[in-house]
Length: 256
Image (cartoon, rainbow, N blue to C red; front, side, top):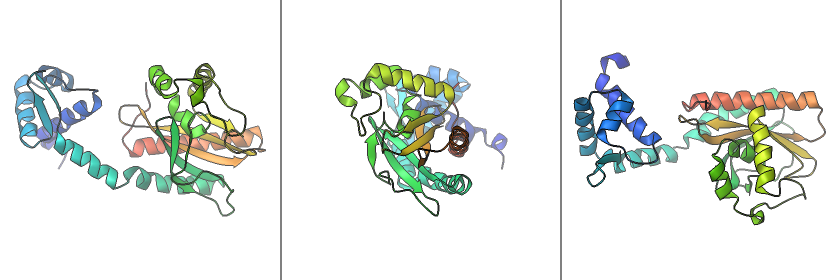
């Protein structure tokens, strides 16, 4: 059955998707306008969603927000580790193509947390592994995501010079340095670190985006730091292609 034959389902999903994309509740008239529905239809669908606890009505604000049922669905989604499941075959393919270690990381606060690690037949000995946390400003994965956050959020994550820890005596040491670095990396399309995490090793990483064009993860390739420029650029291109493929798999989009 095509979506054209179930317009109510499509319209209901459009309302939920719109509410999920907002930072807070919205009035029924705004929802109707933004989703492209007649007001009567929007009110009817909101009433049904409210009855099923997928939305909640806030009478003082005359607005609607996501309800507990939507939260439960989202929590169930996270319990199934969907990001890792969707990313793993792509990382396996990346390792086969590149012959280097590939990793998937997310941003938690001002740290990079690694969710997946795939290695070639002759792996490198790296500190990074599943569950390991590292300062985001030092890792290519972390900066690939930081590069697409609002400036105010980056400032909140790095409020003082004390936030700029170092592992090898290298890397950005101030918010100004970090902002300039991620500005360049955002324009280039990928982030790069060489010897900032472990001396003698380098990484390139590209950002994965969600449906709102927000950074949700990063795909990284790690290799010995003595590779030539052409090889490094090829690995960066492979990381970007894999990140774009994962963005597509999670129905995400690159920010405009």
